[in-house]
Image 1 (cartoon, rainbow, N blue to C red):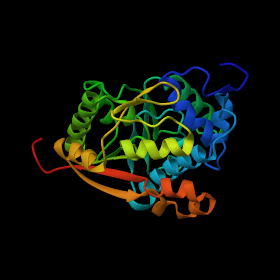
Image 2: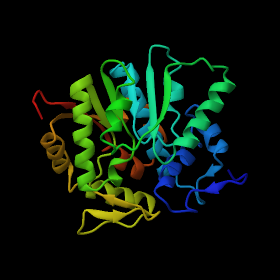
Image 3: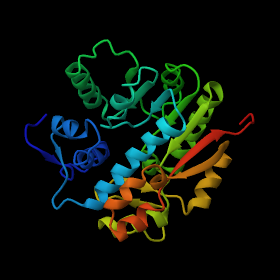
Length: 282
């Protein structure tokens, strides 16, 4: 790795979309985030955008609190982990099994995790697993998921907005099949709609998307959006899921003190979607 800080806008590739939240999380009080950003030589572009920092912080913290405080999840399977330290944090509880997976950022993720596990002298730590996985690999997915015993919470923060409609359907079918076999639920804040994107664009300076369900992020990565939340809910129901949602700020209420009115108006609508398989033979 380079010894100089690499600003996240330098090479605009899909793999680097994992770096954007990692760079901004490095400015927060979330454990390990500053160290991982330094370890991977990541820095947010200048001028820094506080709205992005709050967005990534809320996404991370609300999902973690849902898992620990409300669901008391014991088996967690994260897709497209990127450089997230959630596995390091949650496996301090020996009763939690955590499976962190990624495809493009696998090597960096494993190196970062091993570095900090060794720093903490937890070489015998046996409840944190790091595996290479393309989330769309229907054959390998159940083999990896099966590493965890019993009901599992399958989670991801990003990922879904970068999948085409066919890829979304493929992932939904794969997750549904795994959950029918193992039990558990699918949780994500990443339910991209046109309205959500355009509100986010006004907050961050990205170009809005008009008259299409396909757009591109500032880094040039394609994004595929649902028309609205009703359209998204219908998608999950059609793929065999019951759907409920939890407002992110209800899980992290203290964050409201740091938000501008504009930021609050956007983040107030952010939610975690929880999908459980319908009782059917889907």
